Length: 583
Image (cartoon, rainbow, N blue to C red; front, side, top):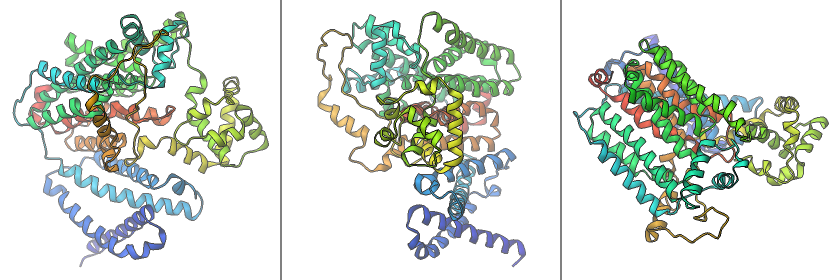
């Protein structure tokens, strides 16, 4: 037996032991670790051997690019960290010294290595796969009818539509435009004003018909592009089921919440950007493609505050991917950003639109400081006095919610002016508390952002509220669901109230995020790395939310990540012939 074989065997054994320890410490009590170590180690040794055989580059004919060899370990470590933390935020960050740090590091290494071996096997096995059954086509008009009819069915089940408290705040602004605020997207509020107040006379029906039509058109455009890219009957039919029948989309089309319309425009922007990248900019020479790209970018910019980051982080790198028509692309992106900047900096103030309060963008640091107060952390008398001036300690202990900062901000005892009047002092206090209370800060942050990174958490995708069908100050007329006999069964299926938690995996945003990472890894293997600005549409949504997590975080904030995944799959698995056809 040569030395290299011995080294490989020793490395496999060590890796198996670390992975078995990681799984035991993650899912079981340490006291029974010894009983599980030996069988788990043998299982991992066998698993590693089989996975290496199936993912051998020589067998698949894959030439491993350096970019792939860099990206996959990064994704594996990120996934390993998320899985380790998902085993218990308090448990993971609770002992941030000595043995606790060593245990956490070994656990992350073990899960990351296990993830790397599995991800490598999956991506290399997918290297030779493609979606192409010929030139399968469904006419766009039929795609639209399928989507529109499905969404109308969902809407009739939820008639007159679903709202949340944000929508009520917007509708109250519509009744008195002098109170119009950019805390909620002004464009969306004005759509409500037009279709609910002016044309609908207090009824939301016209607004929902408008929204269903717009989302159906965007989905139709995306589906048509997907069938052009792949020509695969099976893939296209699966995408039709995903966009038209998947309950989350039907619910989104029947909800007044801005995030579903925003997600649809993110999809439109991504599809148009894919056209531009595949054609090396030539698509911009078509007036229709140029107009749709600008419309998609404007919808992304105006329908959520993080839209600017999405366009910025995907648009700038796309400039360097284009050799031809670069000036035309820069002009299109610059025009959309200029329109958005003029609206926010000039038009909004001229119309008297109220700026959002400063504390609205400080949800994360406020939550971290309040958790430190709740847990009686290491706080100096000076900082304690400052925090007491914002909100009494007793109120914090009563109102604190680990998943949202709203109970703190909306408390009658909360004094946001203390923060707004002296922002530098707020951040100095925040930094000082971070130095003395790192565990509390990490626990608070990862508990608040759990729905963004934990693949196993149950996400609040679906929000139901009992609402009045009319929103004028006059006496509302009662309206009931048009299909009352089936509404409860449909809602029960959506909520998965009586089913296994496994079904929550289907629309967990973290699952779609890591799926996009793996698809990008396959793109690198197929030498399609130039498409990475397109993947940034999804990744920038996630990055923007991780930087500034909105209050009462729900999975709907990452709806655009979910919608873009079929597009990424089509671009990853399309054949070279279709790349030439579309490029």
